[in-house]
Length: 183
Image (cartoon, rainbow, N blue to C red; front, side, top):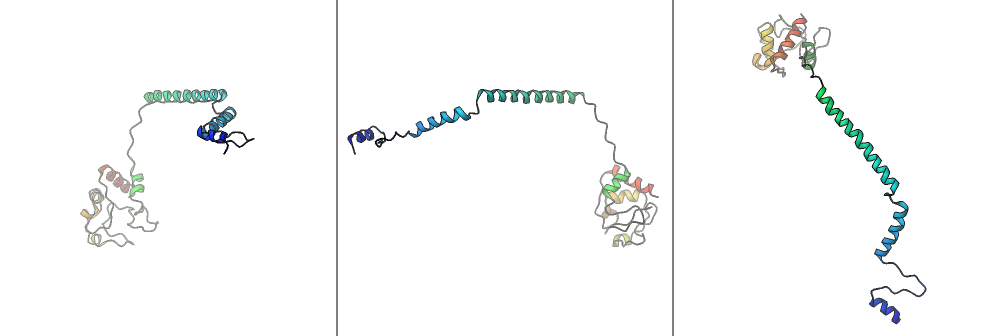
């Protein structure tokens, strides 16, 4: 090792072979390439900065105006009308039609047809096999019996297979009114 190389090691520098250019240290290399890259490909050029500012203003302005419009419209809205309760036909279709029909031409489902049920004896419809509780039932369907049955079928007819219960009196009344229309 030449004395020149020894002095470079002592000074913390790498020895440079004769005729070769010295290598840059990592920090110097990073600075060198960063300057080259950022000058060519920087995303913070004056044009980009200007366009970003315009986009920000453009997005904020309409957004603020829309929010202001919504707040203004919310205060000026007319109150909605009170929701009318569903009629018996709609309630029957939603809650009863899965198991029951309202005419005699449809095939029998899980429950008997309820066509002209008001005034008929309970558990006596032709073509339907009733549970043991209904086979022993001895009453005629009227408003009061239908209301009690829809409220709690097992309490009204022990051994009944119907799992449906309707706790709301106004819903039961609407369904019973619809069944009376079928008579």
